[in-house]
Length: 204
Image (tube, rainbow, N blue to C red; front, side, top):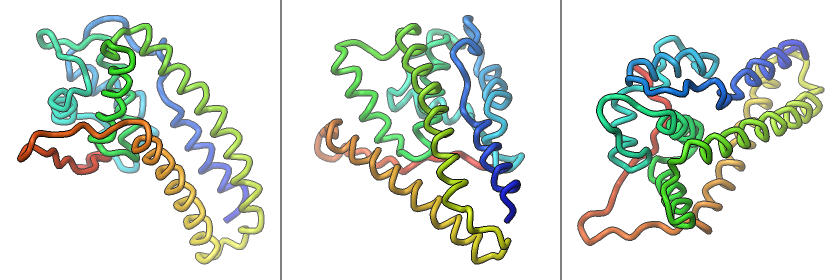
């Protein structure tokens, strides 16, 4: 693998930085319109053409789990779109149950719902800006760390994949430990325990 090829892969990953709050329409939209926007905004995230980034079923599940605020009528407000974007990024490595624990913990501390558009915009913008800076730093470390993997052999490629996978796993474990330590698991009445599997990107 040549350095240029690795740079191209990392550059493509850089395109997945996310949507900025100013890109989100400040008007209510139907579900079909939001799905279309997600397909346009996050197209670079898709591994294959058939992969679905957001579906009506996903949104219905988010609503049932209390991850997004109740919808009045058939249109979704800007706050809903911001909540969906937060969920989208979190669910790449966390279960819906874990995301629910985090959202519930934030709401409990604020003693109000995490619904205000201004608060959500500020939080999301902070995330996008910081994440871009973190990725730039990590990108340089990866290029330096894989400097001796230039033979193009499958063994070298396996080495790169192992390192990236292990790094992803360690970061995911850190996220899970933050949740376990600071966001208490809500106790369910006997016989009503939730058993929600990890939801990642749905592929058709």
